[in-house]
Image (cartoon, rainbow, N blue to C red; front, side, top):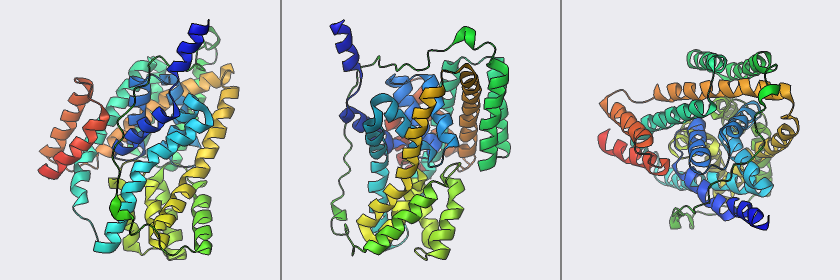
Length: 400
């Protein structure tokens, strides 16, 4: 009995391991929220086996209907499931940290030397690679979920709805309709086949990821501008207030941010705001890291840190509370049936994200080559995403 307890204790990753693994994920997850979720799915479910496929889909479903950046909410959920509240904090901080460091460096360069058009070439290589990563994740989710005809139908409808129409309200309708369909289709048979959903699967021993070097000595000179308590308070509560109104992902939120920071508070010019969004897209992790650009202009490194905490912290707290609530009600048969439908809908949503991201790729043989090469790397050679996406960016610099 004691040996069994020791084995289980060793299977649970340490907070340091969790930090290092999500730091690597955050440093390589280019291309928006679904790309980050796909990398988390690949690392945490497929490679590390820390969560089951069902648990991951439940987290994505919950993050979709709660406010805040979906990807960071999924990371907070994952950390919470693995190591509780501290795990959620460590995971969220680690996954945001690489993007934060890079956006601060780019902000420093931007305000010192002007626009950075050369960065767009690397991004052109990221787009087809990210499309391939999302396709790989959607396939893996569908294969492990063992979808029957009803679930395949739900997934197909979700894919078509988002691929053809898309948008915030359509996303909410898809989640609600998938849950309703699951309740109607599966509630009777759920009692006979109750899934062992609440269990954690810590079958793999953690392997420490190599800590990526993120040293940026040039930031020391620009670390602090004059600290104004009034500006800091206004910046924090403005962004924190907006963060709990964010539904449907960062792109849905962009018009609201622009209205407030450009037209009301006059913190950025229109061109600076456009450039901030562009820089957020070419950095790994969530696009809402662009908030750090706003804070940097106002107050240097301190402002960037305040803006980042404000935009990510409140939704992450709501996500942890929602995860606790879900754990209390998920054993109800009707809830399980609804979640079964939502999981199928989420798989369709992930597939639609691949379609959406792929449609933004530059037309030409270069994009097709990168897409096929990344698919081969993931499916045939099982190369870690941490190597695939940065390599695609380097190839983009050479080919475009």
